[in-house]
Length: 234
Image 1 (tube, rainbow, N blue to C red):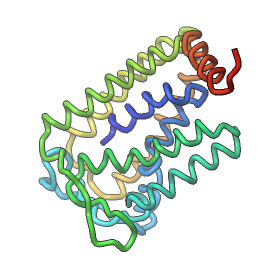
Image 2 (cartoon, rainbow, N blue to C red):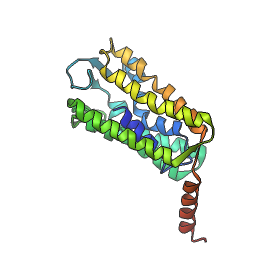
Image 3 (cartoon, helix red, strand yellow):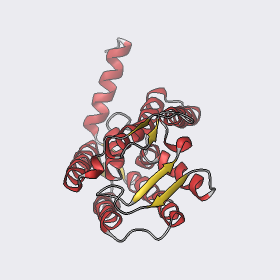
Image 4 (cartoon, rainbow, N blue to C red):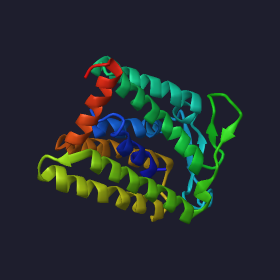
């Protein structure tokens, strides 16, 4: 899954309005940021095997450190803890931890049974949405559309970059998704890993766009009202 992960990041802006969209994108993609490093290091393995599923030729053979459920929880706790130490905002740290873990849950929907529950475990999870191209496209594009709407309603542009930069960003991701999904199979596992590193550019772009947008006044009012009700103040 690609757009689905970023849809969670866009939607999470509602739960953590103070957090940069770049940080939310990093949380949503975090398992896939760890994974290529481990593939290039020879610790985890992926093979190019057209026909593995209808949607992707990638055969994820071994990736318990980056993509087991237990380690996803560990990565989520680590990511949230780092944010807590730096920003001192426990609610946002919790949101980020959950966003990291959501990556595994969404992957479980689309993958064939290849996701381990824990390192060394024999049980593999995957419900195989990738076996249907129409269903995969319907789910990912719908999620992405919802995420964009939520983020757009949560924020407003400060300037032209916030408006047109966001529009370009919103269009760019589906284009990358289409090219990656319907282009020729990658030549090698290392090529896949290096290409996956490109997500860092997406994260930087998301952070840049978010700096040129601001949370809407209505959201600030809602958040302040919620805090007041919890503390019992008027």
